[in-house]
Image 1 (cartoon, rainbow, N blue to C red):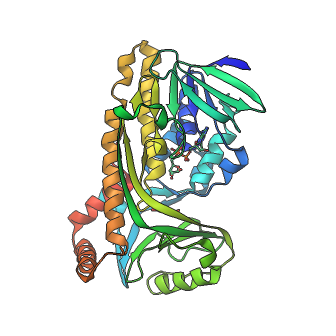
Image 2: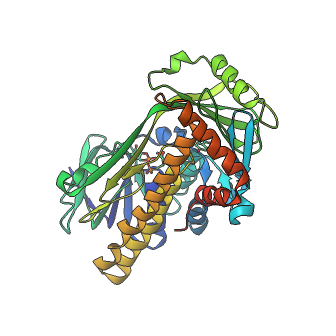
Image 3: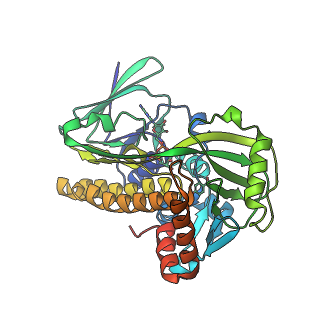
Length: 392
Ligand code: APR
Ligand code: PHB
């Protein structure tokens, strides 16, 4: 048994936990990040890769944006396609803002690599984590590492432990409301060291459903296609997937699809989910622990960053003024932005996918909406300002 103390116990070393840890440390607030997985596991997870200003601003504020500035690709626009119709959304002209292509994996690596020099402690392989007394002013977290059980006493707990973590479940069920919407398909993704087929992202719909051409760099591509939830990765030999991607993108892309060996292939389900409340006593939730968006629009990581933006302000205010009032505004601010990102991801998902129960009428509605979008600067602006991220 061992006993330790810190000011803020942060559960989870995904982008939410790591960004929060660095922001608090930069203000002299003591914190420890507790992570169930190994460092190697965390650093090799493949996730989305489009960053809004809220995320790049946090990296800049932390002084951890050097590699990102060097390697990331700045995107002035993206494309929505249906069949052979390609509509370019000029986000820079419409909003004055851009997005940045930089993998979540790279951002996570930068944050972990900088931890020792910033004296941010990350405990990897912290097993059997449990939260205690979260509604008292002396909460704690217990975990086991290398066979030793540690009790970490703290002032506050930040639950940044993703969709499957224990933090959310530490809030009594009668105090919460869950909102869930599941989609009847998943995304099959492939990562490969081949040049992207287009200089900007293409979200494509068509009679065969959704496909996305994305990238990580000028030499690394990321593609996805919509697949039924019953499909297994074994159903998709690489050549079958490349055939499908060529069929979808060769006619509409600048360079055409280049094939190459897969570095990673995986299938992920799509869901929308919001957990209200994001605070119970001294426990605060942030990121995927409190909400999930379907990946259409790449809002997951950016929402985690905006939660952390608000939560770090609240915690810093609490320590500066020694006043719990500073923390009252967190969930209202966070949820107001979360619901709008939920709406955008849901509407873009509905516009760009084939639904099993979709008839010819619903298909025509999708085509009419994209046709309208192609001619309406007002509608393009609405899409663009959501894509670059609503203000924090
Ligand atoms: N104990 C400690 N850590 C845990 C536990 C636990 N019991 N359960 C989960 N975790 C860790 C996970 O291993 C993971 O590293 O919490 C972390 C949560 O990280 P993410 O899932 O990346 O969530 P978040 O930081 O909110 O980032 C949101 O990342 O997951 C993507 O699609 C998501 O893009 C979105 C963004
Ligand atoms: C990705 O590059 O992985 C990606 C890009 C945009 C999305 C989702 C995923 O909307």
